Image (cartoon, rainbow, N blue to C red; front, side, top):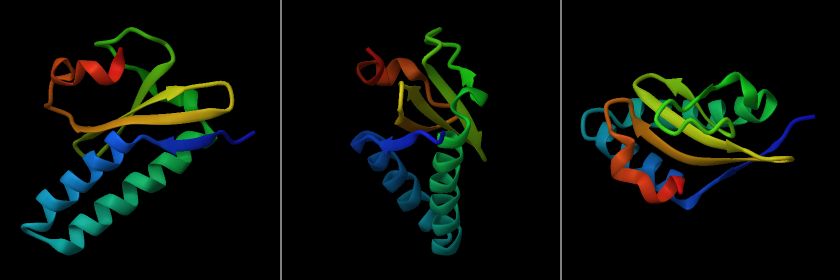
Amino acid sequence: MVATVIWSQESLDDIDAIAEYISRDSPYHAQRVVEALFDLGERIGEQPLIGRIVPELGNERVRERFLYSYRVLYEVGERRIEVLAVIHGRRLLESMGERFD
């Protein structure tokens, strides 16, 4: 069974910020990255446990997948997956602690 993928408002804001940053150099590539992120979200719904447990959190329900230099963090529920954040791989999670409490 494919789980429903819900994008949190924060994760959508993250994607907007990523697209805005990339579009400064290339609107085309910004659009491609956004499309790839949403495609990855759909694949997460098909196999949510394939992502690794986020090492900084150690919670087996919070996992991540990688796309280019971005981390897509999500929480696995009974029948739905919630995408919590889309962040650059070099960004520290400590700066986003309130999202993962």
